[in-house]
Image (tube, rainbow over all chains, first blue to last red; front, top):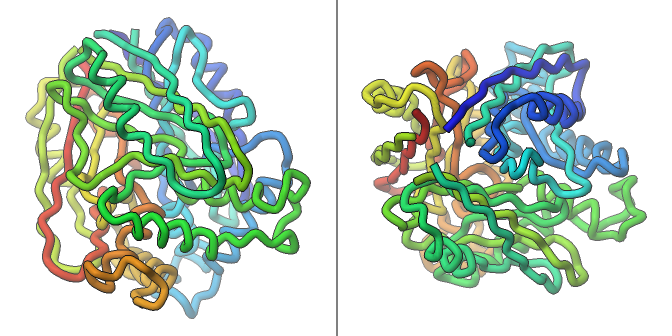
Length: 139
Length: 139
Length: 139
């Protein structure tokens, strides 16, 4: 059994989706492990991870819009307001999506659907530096 | 360490829940691995995976109904409408649920609660063939 | 490769968040495995798991409040009402959050963000005893 650890840094500029698929695939291509599990954790609770369609950018637009309407930035709705009007909605959107993604690697190929991309879903308004822990275990 | 890969195909006929627990347990029973991690990924972004109660079918009815109301099929709400009125709601419902499920296998037994079943949650209206990647790693 | 299994029991008293981070870290500290994957499953479908900020308790208050409003306890909305007005909302909230959490362990340290805590999210009104399956695989 072998294990490899890595961190991918994504610098975000406001709410929306940031595709990191290529960064993950690039790191995987340099590893010796052929078959195994890839575990990706985001080490923050005001941004999250999703797998989504990478074909039509309108999908990401509509997805962002849906979450913005479902979880409005309205200080009257929340007690936690000291970190900005976008912080509590960010925590809620994170709870509604994912803090981690897990994939299988088979013969050096990540098992992803044809149209699936890996996205960081940023929920804060200002610039943030997000750390995505990558961990591959296999042989 | 040993690893085993498998694909389970689920043919869906419209929105709703499709129980694949037995198919997964049947495949597991034929593997040599006694203890390990089972990773299941759905290779699509318009259907998803959930663990839910398998006792009262009304639970699945109410669950489907909740998501249909939360994410309506209404072309006025979305830019991405070219693939049908059900496609963008499908992507949103997928983001709100799961693309993967992970379980522990102990002494050849999948660690599931008494009332837990594994379901594919189909969000599209027409027939679809869904691929569920299964990957067991352990010894 | 080594594997270790464990169960953490959390006794809940009504809806809300129960921090079990310390219990998990305490168990991990006693294991021989230095690097690996930790898989945590909740063996119930009316309570769930989330990673959330552990700094300001108002975050958890607002998060609970959001889910209570999004998924109201109103028997007119559901067919599944025989197990109490809180049971069907509990199943829906579980589907919207997580049944499992997966983490990486590196040099005996769980890779968690500075402000991340592990929470059981109880959705039922009465007292419940919840089982959290823990499984560590690595070397």
